[in-house]
Image 1 (cartoon, each protein chain N blue to C red):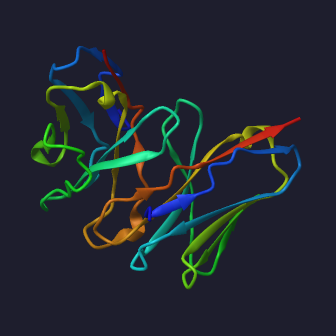
Image 2 (cartoon, rainbow over the protein chains, first blue to last red):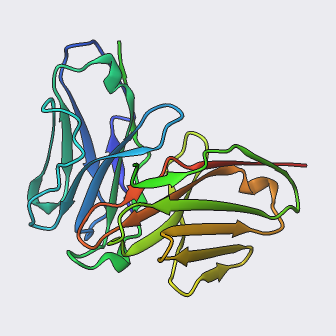
Length: 118
Length: 109
């Protein structure tokens, strides 16, 4: 498709289980971002991939969170041993931005994955 | 101090009103500035970039004050369809965009 695609759109899991969230960015976009948004809150930065550079993981809240981006395209965000406070909408975005050039940073967001941890 | 701060509102205004939102950022090395709009239960979408000289897009005017590290968004002649949350966004080159928590606008008839 033409936009950023995320799957699943909704995920309900039990506390302690692992989950994987998938993001398929717009073709050709070198930058990929994961954010999360709790109900009524702002976007919390999680991780940022830019081309072949090492990802910026500074926003990951704990070592239970990890993400990878294979072949510079699809990304998977993994949350291990989920907790109730992990419940949120996880948003993926991509952009054409090239490293060290911030002027082309228009982000295109996917519709998000609503994660509910029971 | 948070990197990007906004007055959460809500701002409740009648149709036709002019409303202004401000945003402050803490990192003086920030280079790019944007306003995004987020409708309820939807993903954010770019409203406009903010340039040093200020810029206008129809009823929307964005201003940047680097010395004071704040950004503003002015909406003239508010429409019902302007009701949304407006997110202030900043970044340095090569780093992720940092979002403010947003300012909620509600325009009523």
